[in-house]
Length: 233
Image (tube, rainbow, N blue to C red):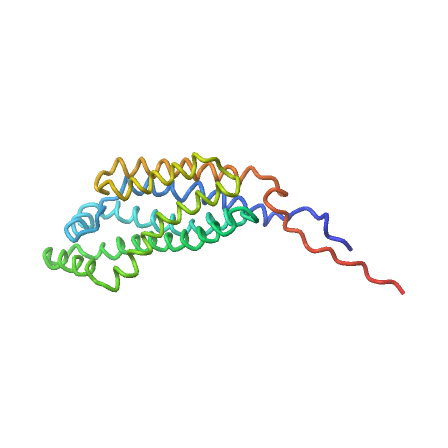
């Protein structure tokens, strides 16, 4: 029996749609998170006040950050899947760095959840504890590079998508501008951060729609190898 002409399984289409949906969702969730986040900056004073007066918003922000971080995995996988020749090396880099950046956002979400235990303790002691935590060398050596990887990840993802032919020049240029702007503009200016994340949502949302619109053959049919007919005697 020859399976070379079999119809692609629905599971392979689900993978494509999952990757496409993740590309749309991971930056869109960050737009929503940035508009809710009561603890931007993460200082001891900010974290104590946010946990005391805006616990619900902190929980929502933590969940959104963690979900966005997890969605980086299928998002970068979908782009890497399409980079068969051109852009393959850059797509591999994007997959590695993008997933690390997702870990960074997941870690921030966990930090927010831990901070919910601050209310009820002595205010000065709780603030001092967060400040000591922020100043811990081991934590900074691990957490800061992971958070930094998110910016490098979205850059590599956008340029890999361009090399693969999924998007024009406008996509990686827009993402590059957002990442550079994020490094030079204070993060305390919330509307600029939200606008930048909105640009990422447009770029990666477009890529998600491009993946969703691919045919089975363009995505890459997952066919079983042909099984030679049994030799007859």
